[in-house]
Length: 462
Ligand code: SF4
Image (cartoon, rainbow, N blue to C red; front, side, top):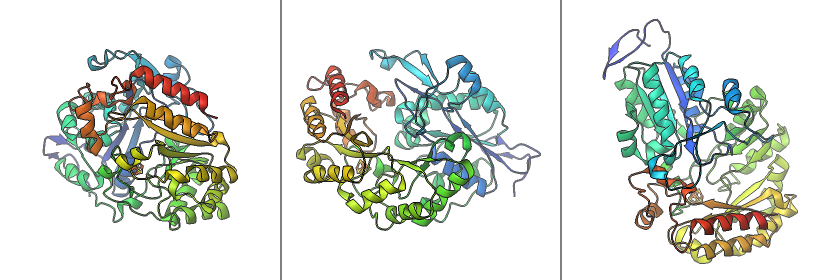
């Protein structure tokens, strides 16, 4: 039971006359050179919010990336959005941080205006503020959210958690100004933080991988996120999946289907993006039964896979089922057409089967425009010729080609190579992890080469 008006260690004060303590979730603005909403949702924060709500907290959310804010629209214009739930955010050009001064691109703050953000925050009287973090190079928005919280909510504990807080814990503790940095799973770490703040301590869910999430209309009305499984069985040298999930954990098809129906029924949502790292792994047990339920019982929805899927697990039955269930696109993480690349870095691909699998997708009814292939560019010591070779290889198959620019991620094996290779201060300054600055540029792969590769991919895409 929540007690009223008690001073608690380390000096936070819980407010009087409240039946339930209020946890304010904050999804901060983003500072970057570019930002496009390809189903960017604070999924982790929404799960923590649901857990706290089920544990007796009142939970509110301030989403600084809301693209519908009327006050911001008057100042910044209307961000262009698409029917599939993707699109632009509000954008305001701001001064570049010193470390990025040499980059010849404009730097911007994405999200509702500073005034609108403060106005939304002021509507609440929280007992704890929980700020979610994303990419390591987005921490400037986290600092802003902490500063606004500090200004408005005197002696209220401010907690940050999420991707940046986990990958750059030391940096977050020294630079952000939050009272607590939750590194790793918040389900495990947050109870101790709440206890130290004199707040009720929730019991972690028995099965964290199946924990429910809040489904606010503002965030999930146009498009929602769905996750069937946790983690990935592969160990690619450039990927942080292992840092967050030690191993692959199979999900529950029935529960995922219920979740989908609930979002669709309550919000009318028609677009769903899978956040899975390995959607097709053990597909007979999870993805296929899930899709069979969608086909047999409805609802009629659209599915997207922004993270890409594993080519090696595709078979005709699955592809046909995906099409029937409402997949509007298939994105594949090919990364490179060179065997040596895969031998050294990921071992996740059977290259020989690429032509056959693309043919399979087309036979099932996916057009070339609905098949996207990711090529990874800008790894340490990678030459532009390798990327060009991969682009030309893929172009023979009449699909869309996406050049995915490498970003060094702390905790991954390739991060250590990146530290040695890059002339940017990657270890000390997470802003230099940003793939927009091409942190691994060298004479064998310059920024001009990268621009040429991106242009080539556009020209050769179908
Ligand atoms: S297969 Fe994909 S999700 Fe899995 S480790 Fe490799 S890059 Fe990460």
